[in-house]
Image 1 (cartoon, helix red, strand yellow):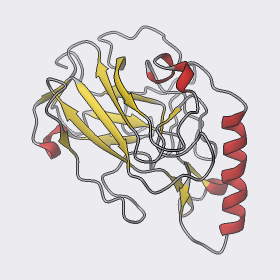
Image 2 (tube, rainbow, N blue to C red):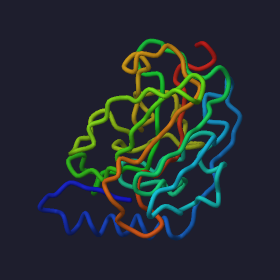
Image 3 (cartoon, one colour):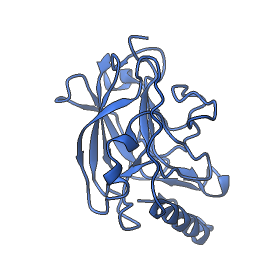
Image 4 (cartoon, rainbow, N blue to C red):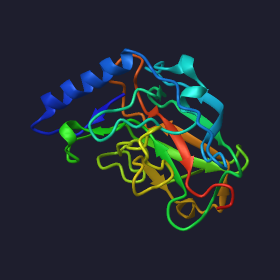
Length: 224
């Protein structure tokens, strides 16, 4: 599940990773399903193809990945996630009118990345490759450099700050955290489906391997 940069603090990083794994093992929390105008969040899991080492919160699908994110902030990964496993893949359908290409980012994908000790130079990142589709059949991938940090263009590398009740708008790319994507970078004007595939960097803990999906949100939803 967790992949982190080599550093002099590697031992401490591994301890932090173990703490997160223990928190995940303690249980998962179903996503808050507060109604939001235009339904900018995922409303349906179209398919889930888990990879080796998946399993965490799979029994809580689909609810665990629908609705808004439950971010844990810069130093703590959320347990409101489903682990895809190494190379695992999930396809979600967005509500409302889907995503339209507007100014700046159009889509945010939320994982449970965090900074060890709050230090951005020591990220725990689980890269995922994001693709979008208008019809659920033909997908276009965003470029993702999963070979080495900082994993440019991938999801799963930025902590999540938005959570139900904390006043942070999950559709605000400047405040919500997570990883933002612009449909223009994929050359598509509209999308209703989002596919996320773990980049396959390898499992670290049983049942919690690979990309851990919390939620997705359309920044420009309902034609807005």
